[in-house]
Length: 88
Image 1 (cartoon, rainbow, N blue to C red):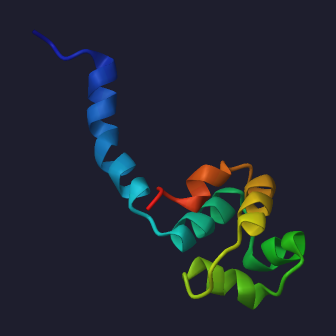
Image 2 (tube, rainbow, N blue to C red):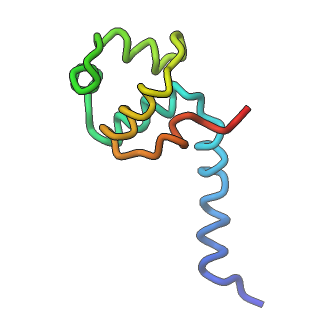
């Protein structure tokens, strides 16, 4: 029996999906910002905060509020639920 193409694709993606699921919230924020092709300066301007604050959030040094997650999601067009990470 030959493997169906969709299973081959899923099998190849599984390690990548697992990697994406284990990202910290800060890593998720950084990834979303980079995929949206925004610098930390541009993200800071869009959110009305200092660039250093963006860096602290992306390094998991400062907690991120729900309002920030919602705004980050809107700016990057990334689901806020994914940015928030898996429930604890």
